[in-house]
Image (cartoon, rainbow, N blue to C red; front, side, top):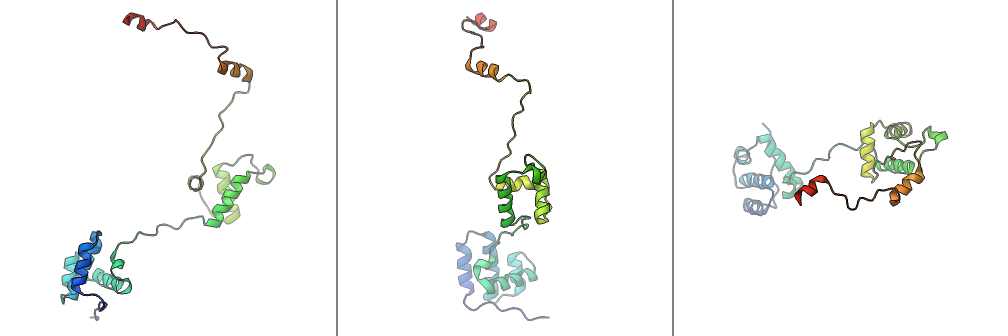
Length: 183
């Protein structure tokens, strides 16, 4: 059986109990109380029982505590998945979106998400689907804009005249039949 790792000498059981009372983090408090039991001469099994964990976890707490002190017993946020695009690739994506496509070079007259995904693959050998490209663009502050469709035979002069009210009927004095019944 191996020798247990000694706790650092600059703390004692009373100090760890005081820190456990002051902290707002319940997991850190539980871990500090378990290590305080070891400082006070208790066994590692007793510390594991107090902490509600196994002996290996208590050993991990001791290693973390010895390396970085009481703050090491706070659960850190997991780093998460590494992003598929780095900052240089994001800046290149912004530049290509801002400059717009060149039909002779890019073969398109407007950028679609699928076109940008293909460009990223050709330029950086990064495979992204359209949803991920859209998410990246949204993080960069871009929104999807679509033009409102216009009928090829639409009369723009008649539309402007209608907007100005020239062709609107005058409906003053007319009331719905249900309003007359309430009078």
